Structures are given as C-alpha cells and as structure tokens.
Image (cartoon, rainbow, N blue to C red; front, side, top):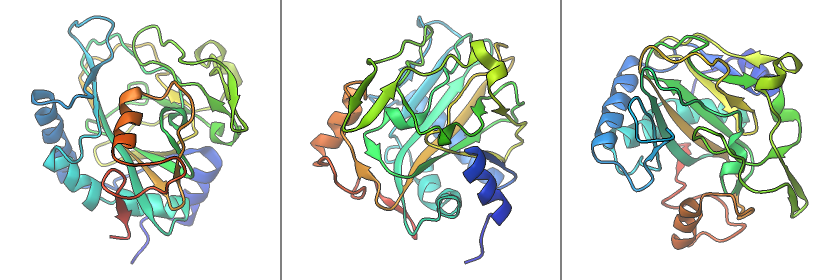
Length: 277
C-alpha cells in the first residue's frame, strides 16, 4: 500500500510533536462529520458537556465516545485515512482507537482551551497520537497552538478543567515511579516557548503526540462558529494504566465495567483495531 506521508513529514512530527498535513481528507469526510455533530447535539450521549461557566449562549460544547452511537462517526473512525496516517507517524504495526471527540465553539464564545496535554486525561500508557481536524476553514489565531518540542520534556502534567477558571485537578505526586506536575503557565511566559500554529483549509489536519502541550493562544473571541473532530489512537503494546484520581470517573468506570484490567493491552469493543483493516 502506498504511503500517505513523506519521510520529511514523519521526521518533523517526531522532532516537533505536531505537524500540519495538507489536503489529506476529502470534503465528503468533513461534511459527514458535521452531520454527525448535528445529530449528536440533538441526541447527546451521557458524556455530553458544556464548557461554559453558565448555560449561556454562545456555548462551547463537547461530546466523546460516540463513534458507536453516530453512524457518520463510525464510518470516519474505520474508513478515513486517519489510522494509516497514524501508523506511518508512529512506525506502528497496529493502530487501536482510544477515543473519538468533537468540540463546537459558537461565535462569540468567551470560553477557551487551557494549555494541557492529553496523556494525563486517559488511563492508558504507551505511544499515542491525536488527529485534530477542523470542520471549517480556520485561521491560525482561531484554533489552538502547540508548544514545539514539549512532547520531549519527559514530563507528565496534571489535567486541567476546560471550564472557565481552568482549575488544575489533583496534586503533584509520584505514582509507580511517574511524577505528575502542575502544568506550566504558558500564556504568561510566551517568550520562553516556540509555538506551532497554522491556517487550515478544509481537508487539512494537525497530527500531534499525546504528550504535546496545546491550548488557546489568542484571547480573541471567534466571530464564526468553529467545530473540530478529534481522534486519539495508539500503537501496539499500549496498555490500560489506572493511575491517578483525577481521571474522569465515568471514563474509568466504563472501562472497568467492560472488563478492562490494569495492564491489559488495548483491544475489544471499546478500543478496536483500526489498522491494518
């Protein structure tokens, strides 16, 4: 099977922790995902969230683990180029799904994404990456920014709530030899870091390492409604790792109720193999 990515793109991803990939998704995938989000908003899962402080309009909305509830999402998860792209970036023999996720930030929403990295939000340990796919043309100051090279810091930061106030969950600690730290104040120290941010047209995406810090760089309020779809996927030998009380209780409980035990490899109904198909 022909490769989707060049060696230069793969090496850049490894060095920077995030890379923009141009025109990798046909427009029909974009339209299908927008239909899926509209369906999800009308009939949301129990995990549906609003990240606004109050139930005000405009809103900042999210739902996740809905790929098996919304046909458009399921089609994308199994049949889009995402898994093959991830396999090339990670040098993987297999790719498993961790979680699907969408966000919708309405025009005028004052809520923003805190700087965080995804690794501390999940009970998994291994080599993982994330697809960030904007569903509207998005300027570099309308999306999120990634802290270049932060995936190589060999640090794990506590998770941060997405609601206004961006409270850090948990306390600094060491568990099973891993140190969990408070995240750095990126926005107050912008001169200390190099940021990656891009203008994205329809069909463009960003792929980034699960350890790469990212968040809203600009304080500007969006003048148009922006939505994005994300997938978190993992290389073979990624395992269940129940660590830390700050992981979402409902997320962990669903995994435990499904029979996943600490140390299990990904697989089964919740974490299906996406590549090879």
